[in-house]
Image 1 (tube, protein in one colour):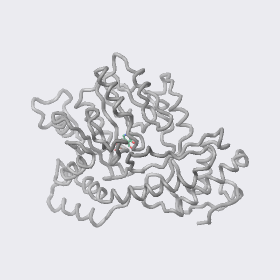
Image 2 (image 1 turned 180 degrees about the vertical axis):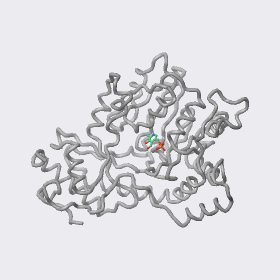
Image 3 (image 1 turned 120 degrees about the vertical axis):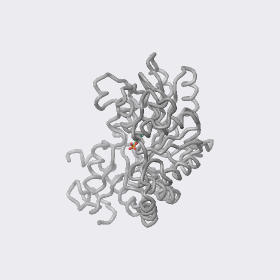
Image 4 (image 1 turned 90 degrees about the horizontal axis):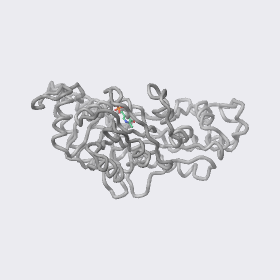
Length: 396
Ligand SMILES: Cc1ncc(COP(=O)(O)O)c(C=O)c1O
């Protein structure tokens, strides 16, 4: 590994040595106590209860409900199935309004069920759903609005609740990024502004179970339907028009989630520290903005998001990504392309200028338990060198 770079000719893209011989990645699993995980796994295997609502997934449901401030938690195999089971349990049909600037699962989950996602634009500061744009997207086919708590920022929950109420629509939240996050009033992500919220425990999330997800809600009837629908429809008196599916969380996933949850606070502290260092190191760099999370809110800081404004920075986002890649820094352009720019949605004309602008500027930078302060110093020095010498890099 080389020292912090100070001259443009030291950049790997111009022939210098790469800064990181072991690649620095976005989305590495948060570390947890492996021996505790194996203890739980052994316990499950000794008890021969591996799935079907075993004690580990039941314990997880209690802990998650407590953490997010909801009455009921229904654990699922992943966040996408959580959205699908929720959609069926609520009876969503026709169209749902979804912000386009999100991971494509927020839309695909519905499209797979024959419900058409209608994309709306987002707010320029946060990237979260723009309520006026959501209102403009309502048609006589609209059944629900999906608020996405992007990067753990709780979207405009009160205004969305009023809009949904006014138009008689269901309101659901995709909180895949938002475990442990709150509004500025301190209200946690499971607060019932709508019918329910889904969570993801995918390997890249702040708490993970290799794969995993959940629906949290305060509605006891909905919770009963969700429990039935995730288990082939079993237990729903009189059945259900959609039958059911298999969306259950396994005990192995629950063992990992519970163990990961024990490291949650430590993970958030480390993430916050990393985020603050990126903010400090890049604060004065023209054309580069590290997304800061609103004062008074809690975030889990699982994402360090940078926006590159080419006109001011003098370098495009794509070129900066290339410069970093040559150094062994594997960034992600979350969420570019946006949902409406992907199949099967891109054939329809859309007018989402804020989404497209943010999409052209966005880069997620490496963070997490295994990224240390020296790593961040090096990454920031590369970004600084590239931005201050953008004109020397345009030919590469
Ligand atoms: C915003 C959002 N929604 C939904 C999902 C789907 O979750 P899962 O990967 O657990 O299916 C993800 C996954 O990363 C996501 O980022």
